[in-house]
Amino acid sequence: MYALITGANGLLGSVVVQTLREQGHEVVGGYHSEEPAFDCPLHQVDITETERVVALLEEYDVDVVINCAAYTDVDGCEANPELATAVNGTAPGDLAAVCREREITFVHYSTDYVFDGETDSFYEEGDETAPIQEYGRSKLDGEHAVREVNAGALILRLSFVYGARGDTGDLVGFPQWVASTLAVGDTVPLFTDQMMTPSRAGNVATTTLELLEAGASGTYHVASRSAVTPYEFGEEICEVVGGDSALTESSVMADLDRPAARPRRSCLDVSSVEGKLGRPQPALEADLAALESAFSDYSS
Image 1 (cartoon, rainbow, N blue to C red):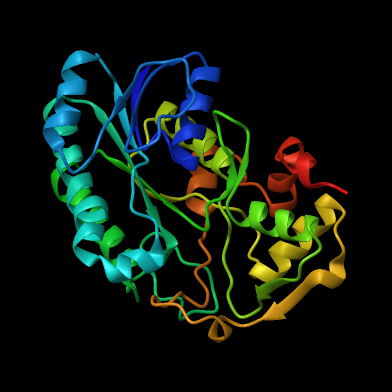
Image 2 (cartoon, rainbow, N blue to C red; image 1 turned 180 degrees about the vertical axis):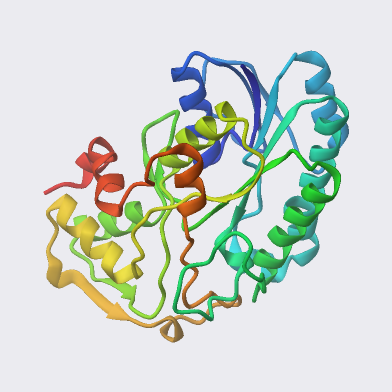
């Protein structure tokens, strides 16, 4: 398989590139700003410039395009809704249409933030969407745009993505912030009134490839089987790095003044992807264990 990965400089994109290459597939990576450290063809690409992507498709005989590029700054999207719509909403649809015309498989990542979080259960793929901030609205626009032009596309919704970069192995996201804060002996304020099912980038990449091998299309949720608050997530990280548990401090979302609202409970039901692949999605404990080497820099 030959794959074009957009957003190869981001956490998820870098892990997808790494996973593909480890499994013997050929990869060409597209990056927006900083070039990732991979020994494979790499090109600077803005996914809103469809012609640039088309040029790469004509240069490389790819079988699949995996779109990891996105504007993921939730508060930034609130201040720049037009940019959010262009990157998260319009561009994915344009890429999906190009891939359909060329009979190239298209994979796109979305988010749990397409839901409003007003539930005490887990969201299934067909549940009603109702985003409460510009980021979620732009990502939902992207889902609709992709589906309208490419019925065979694979759309994967993720939640609270974290992990270790594929090119450098550096820990990125929430665990890095918690671990590094604990390492210097500072207090870590963690929400107790928000709940999610965190998606480790490594599991997302592996699951994506398994779904491609299974010929899957449509929408699937890819996340941990564990529903946790940031406080519970932080406690697990504290235990992994041997930090001082007295430094983890409970707080609530209202304590932090942020432009964009966040869902109270955006937990994703993963039974569909588990049924498709015949295996469970990992629990949080297993996901953190998979990052043991990345956590070693912060362990006491």
